[in-house]
Image (cartoon, rainbow, N blue to C red; front, side, top):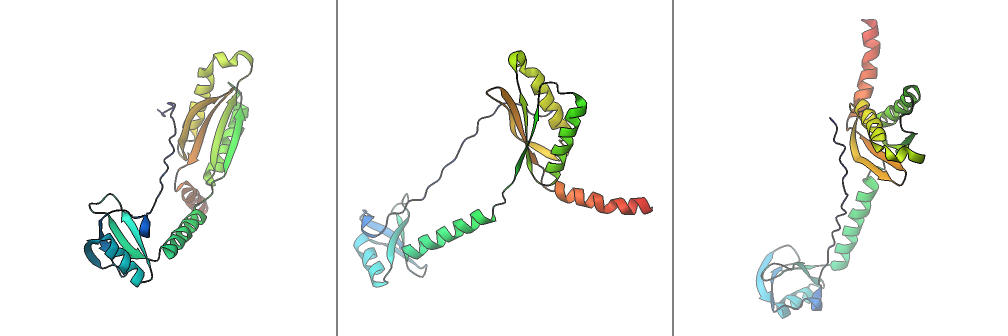
Length: 201
């Protein structure tokens, strides 16, 4: 049986903050040199002087260590390289299109079958599908009817999809979001490739 419990999404936000040069206000640090060598524990004034002599910056990379760990580096170059990697990572992320099928509570099976066929085709092409059921009038008094419709649709597509967002009520609409199962597209191509061979046999 598919899991149709309501769930809350949590957004996790992470941020990296660095203290650099004179903003590092501790008496001593564990220092990593400009070429990655471990210099050891030195006074903050000595660490700053080493960074100046190398024409680089002193960057606190592990503030919670005792003493904090600092590294001599070109901080501007470090930020540029990090931003460049983040841009490349965003570009490499695949944008997945979301399609939608709209129904009413207890839509007749013939009409619903066409909609489910559309959803199957989209899922096989790697798209997500939002299935929505719109309530009118007193239909809101019987949400279990729409929930059963969504359950049946999800189960009929369970071979190529997973439930990304369990049923949720938004205003007068109940919806569920289905995501394609990884590899379903390859499986579809493999089946099509085998069909001619089976016909020849």
